[in-house]
Length: 318
Length: 318
Image 1 (spheres, rainbow over the protein chains, first blue to last red):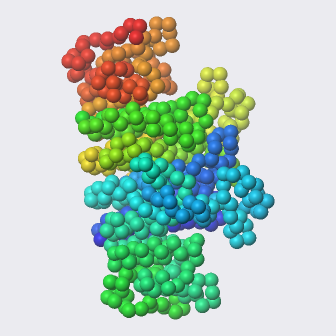
Image 2 (cartoon, chains in turn blue, cyan):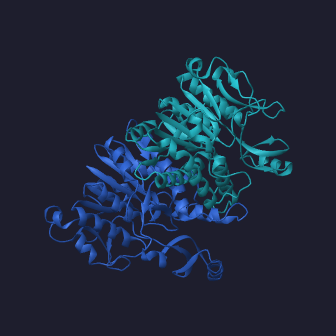
Image 3 (cartoon, helix red, strand yellow):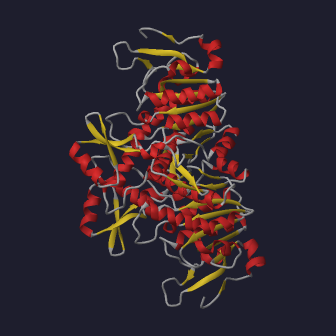
């Protein structure tokens, strides 16, 4: 079985924690305890978010004009791939002695005509008050938008359209290696006149994981986060966990744009294209998710009749 | 033929230039113009220094305690591998369409008993005046040493003793891929009680390149820098470029500890162990170096009688 597992950036740094190296490395070690059982007898590809990490490096890079001008997000994303990839490789190497593990720097192709470039929407970095936000917007370097009662920087989040570094991933998987790749959604690049160039953007990591899973012919896509399951009626008193659903059923519901929305879109694309299994749930439940015993299991139309029954089954009160 | 080429960190950022992303990426594109011809018909492994880059990230990471505590050098080194590796992969991909290119995050094993840990000697980051240096030393986090008339931070620079990520490099080379790896000398790790952990150190990138070349059975090791050739009597009025020498002949001479010394040690180890060819010279001369038409060519005892004559040949006045 070939598994693509996507780890949320918040699994590496929880809300309110200082972004210290030691804290994050300890979280990676804990994450690997949950991930390692997935590797037994299976091909395993691990991808990860980088929201808190790229936000920290962006701030640091913009902190002191005497050191340097702020770095663009393609370069910052590559820095986080190196850092988080190193932690993951080391922790996997320690947890699974003898199993080869490799992290490769990987890019994600996006279209230069993606409408996201004209409408930046992905929040990055800290929140600001109105006055500070106006000053930052006036500087001309950043686009600032309202995020609830405060303001934040936004960058374009174009669709992942291709994975130029896929051949190496395939080669390494064929040797039995666990592959860490496409961190932070991949380093975003466009091709113009035959030349690849980085762009100032952040690709959604779950949409990239979905593309990766499709391109690699994966049997399962696991989106590992900090919620027990996808909620029907999220934020309302009627909220209930969805235990099983087809992609078609999920598409009939609404999910928050900034968080669960892209995850639901990612699993729907995967199961619609492949008829294989996808699941969303807690990192700690990774093995149970794969067994359909925790989280939300999403199946394609081809599989739903067999494995998940004709309709979505929700277990009330769970 | 299998070639290991090591690119100086200064090739990516020249002395006095601000460490901006765009400036460095342009240097990488220029470096790749010199490197690309080496790839034709050959296995090619590229490694690179990271002195200016890791220095910048270390400063940024220490800049604002409100964001985070300073990051250790293993983690900062991994960040630079991601960043520089991304630039190199992209530039090589653009220069050699159709040839696979991969950068993998790679670690270098060092001994926990390496005497370097008791005697930090590698200068990193900017220079300080005496007062500032005393304050930094008193903070207890950094070791500060005199560097000429000023002061700088020093970190341990242990010997490279192993390359845990070598199997993946071999696998990728076997498929014809150009492999970028071991940047900044590799992320330094020690193994204690069977567990690998990062350490606060910087491994010399030329010594790591030499180990890499030996482990990979390379036919040539090229150390690409900004000097035309190794100088005999460097810094004296009698300074002359050395065009060819055996390792034994180089070992009879003295070279500056911080710069040419480790390069000479690196090539000597390679040619002594393998009897193959090594060269030190300008990045722009990469192809001519391989052909023995520029720089300093170093040959092992086995080869020197055949290819380089019995003694060192210096071309006076060149």
